[in-house]
Structures are given as structure tokens and as C-alpha cells.
Image 1 (cartoon, one colour):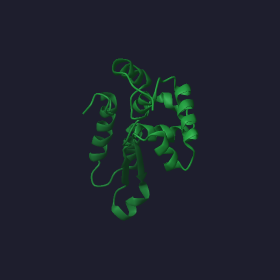
Image 2 (cartoon, one colour):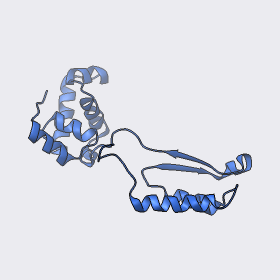
Image 3 (cartoon, one colour):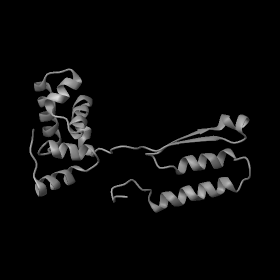
Image 4 (cartoon, one colour):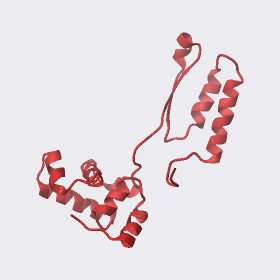
Length: 154
């Protein structure tokens, strides 16, 4: 697993373990407070749904955990419009401007303008840096890699 992989920090893990131990110690049914303690200890990027109404049917609450997957774009991309972000995602997937234009049903010049605006808003030097920022690198890392290895705009 890379050093950039999302891992829970020790205090968060400790809170989760404490909440789960308390919930397990209560026997076959879980008190509402214990279930809600597990919910409260869940990290914010993880979605946890607690269905207390399921207790009547299942004998215990239903917990649904949704863990985010996929790229975690750099915060520098937050300045982009949804369309610019979509175009950057296609750039990151390796598509050329013409291919992106066909895929989105617009002119190639429109895609060039979206890429140009994305570069201006982010301060990144080129398409490769935009792609790196999209797939989870931070802006500084994207710029550092480009300075080290070079890169060409299409």
C-alpha cells in the first residue's frame, strides 16, 4: 500500500475499537447509544448509515458502511467549474483534446479553452501536472514531478 493510501489515524482507530467493544459487550441486541457511538467514531470521509428501524425485523440495527474509492483529487482542483473538472478527468485518463471534444460533443477549441482555464486557475504548468493532481497528487507534488521529469502539453 502506498504512503498516500487513506489510512485511519491511531486516535480514530482507538475510538472505533472502543465503540465496537462497548457495542459487543451488550449482548445480542445493541443499545441505541452504543450504535450511535460507533456512528460518531466513524471518520468523516466514510459514510455510515445506521438503520435503527431494522431492529424490529433483524433483532439489531443495520449498519451500512460506504468507503470512498477512486482518486482523491488535489484541493487545487476545487477552483475548477464542474465542466473543467470533467475535462481534467478526461485529460488524466489520457485522452487528447480532439478525443475529449468528440466524447463531450463540443469543438476542440472549447476543450483547449477548458484546459487553458484549468491551468490558469490551478497554477499548474501543463496537462501532465493536471492529470497528476486529478488522480490524487497534491499540486506541489505534481509540479515537483514535472520539474524532475519534464512534460509536454498536447
